[in-house]
Amino acid sequence: MFGRFKKTEAVGAPEFIVAGLGNPESKYTLTRHNSGFLCVDFLAEKHGFKINKLKFKAAIADTVINSHRCIVMKPQTYMNLSGEAVKAAADFYKIPPEKIIIIFDDISLDVGRLRIRRKGSDGGHNGIKSIISCIGSQNFPRVKIGCGKKPHPDYDLAAWVLSEYKKDEAPALKTALENACCAVELILDGKTDEAMNKYNS
Image 1: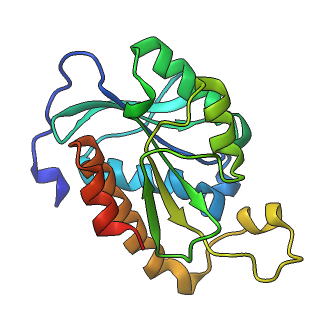
Image 2: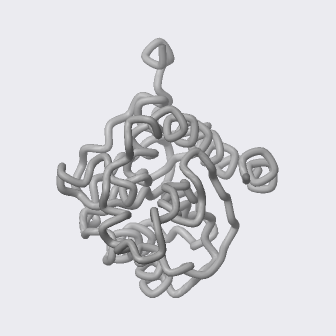
């Protein structure tokens, strides 16, 4: 379906960075902590581009989404050092924090739910902590994808976020990824409030 549309050529300097967070090895592909990677892969399929160039310690695509030239990236540094990749690209293209969109997992949200924010603290998420530390700002928009709470309070957090989504969670996850892509498109168009009103749950 998406292949019928002619892809717009990138013109001018990139305006935005769209970074999905995760871990690069194939064993992590379908884990909860890789929700950001899953989302940008979905975005790439929807808009007909490939995230297959290696630059800025990341797999990237230099592409156009809704007439905005974007660097779409999957940092290859592992989650806890995600900021190194984001900072390298932001410094190179002189992109301010307000135009760096970060997509990542959130254990405080049920699978299928999203939360869009203009800015905020790291909320205990190591990938966001790294980005805030590296770029020196909390003022970047983020799309949080619910990956579900730990089964019980004593469950090891690392083990939980590195566990794979279950089969019965797949439909809710797919809906969340679709909605997250739409939210990113709205943010690119300067409609963050609309994205929050439509998709925050």
